[in-house]
Amino acid sequence: MNIAWWVQRWSELHPGKTAIRFEGSSISYLELHRRVNRAACWLQDLGIEKGDRVAVMLKNCPEFMEIYMAAARIGAIFVPINFRLAAPELEYILKNARPRLFIFGADQVDRIQILSVNTARPPLLLSCLGGRPEETPFIDYHAETATFDGKAPFLSKYLSPLDPTEPQVIMYTSGTTGKPKGAVLTHRKTFFNCLNAEIFFKLHFDDMMLILLPLFHSGGLFIQASPALYKGATLILHSRFDPIRTYRDIEQYKVTKLLGVPAVYKSLLEVHPKERKDLSSLRVCAIGGEKTTPELLSRCREAGFRLRQIMGQTETSILLWAAEDDFLSKPGTVGRPVFHAEVGLVDPDGRPVPPGTVGEIVVKGSILMKEYWMDPERTAETIREGRLHTGDLARMDEDGYFYLVDRVGDMYISGGENVYPAEVEQVIESHPDVKEVAVVGVPDEKWGEVGHAFILSKNGVSPQPSALIEFCKGRIASFKIPKGFSFCTDFPRTALGKVRKHLLVSVERIPTREPPADAWITSQKERI
Image (cartoon, rainbow, N blue to C red; front, side, top):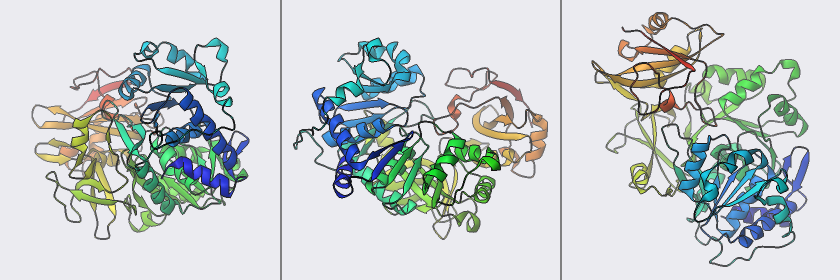
């Protein structure tokens, strides 16, 4: 179940097969295996032992993958970090994970030099990848790993993973509801995620997997990269998303498999038809990470991207998936459970709910995280009686298809009635002058809680709150209609584009536990 062994095995069976394409260069499975060994030897030379954490903050590149596999080979725990984080967020993760080694790109040097982790006790080893090593005090990754070329790490039962339930990765959640949590993911979990992805993508040895999503996220690392390496396929890595380059590489490399978030496909659709390329090589295109509208699915289909939908989270990876034609026969569905998992719906007391009834999605099986790192309290809240409570509310039809309703934490109660913001958002987003909306529940003296809508206007035209209220009437119940409206220039988001609702607070009369919002919000309120 160790991912590093998969690369070693393919290097023996098909040494010349291309494992990774990156910025015009290619790396064979044999070369990748040697690079993994070289990195593993370097880690051991630095004193990294089984169970130590190795943090990496890099854009998509071959070195990310070789360090990921080298850590797995010697039993160290890999900690991928979002390179877009602000300094306080980065400090929090480093202090929580307490890695022995932190590897980062040359573009991050200025940020790293001012962090308090430079004076951490015990000392934190810092290594820089790229740039001019003589200008920084950091360990030069390329220079030092090169000295171990042709060597293999020393492994024993004490220096490498024995039990598949041992931790392999600590992946921090996106932090949509507060401080990120470190989900501890095991070797076994990665293996069964790969088996699920193999079925979903219909993965094959000859596949060309284009990876646009960041590897520090579950979508890029566990749904695409790891399963592709398990099958001996080829990874095409992009360090950043560029829609023109995406079209070009799909045609040039005959890409067969692709995964993107809604924002990716929206950008691809904005490319002028004359600048688009041949998409006939694509066999499976997947979309996930954020809510998907039927309109987007239809537009993508017309453009040549016949999309399958996936739904999951850091703690489990893929949970549900829907085939290309399911959105026609089952409009609004997020699919059925993956093969290697038990997925169900329960009420607040943990009892199964019948078809058609809203319940919380719970999961059992080998794809579950082990725990939250150094957080037994939140682990106990999330994993109860062997089931992981996802926090997602959904209903299921008689055929076993799930329909997402909202997040447990997003739902609010107004005058004794449950309100699901996602339902309200869907109505408001159908207004011709609304580009995007996020609805949150806020305290109210009369009703307990009421809705407040944060809105991105379309084409710079902000509709009047009274017009939005009239638009909602007859489409949703009156108690669901937001009582306040704020017009924004942008939303705070996670790396995958999810709105961080806990940061969406107005400076005017919206109680919150968070600091006031930035200047990109102007607030208007209207009572009904």
